[in-house]
Length: 77
Image (cartoon, rainbow, N blue to C red; front, side, top):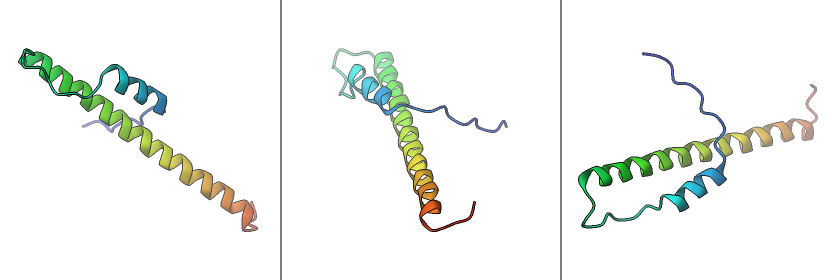
């Protein structure tokens, strides 16, 4: 099994745009099974991108705090 690759940066604005273009809504009675499963897949992709964007933001914030902290505590570089 191959190792997972690191995700590229996911811009939160992209996720917001996808949520507007492909809103999470209940299917219509007239929707076929194929359309329903395609919508489910679309929402799964958006949810996954959202989770990655949040994790990247948290990692970035943690790195910023660590980098800022080293200069405030008199660490020798």
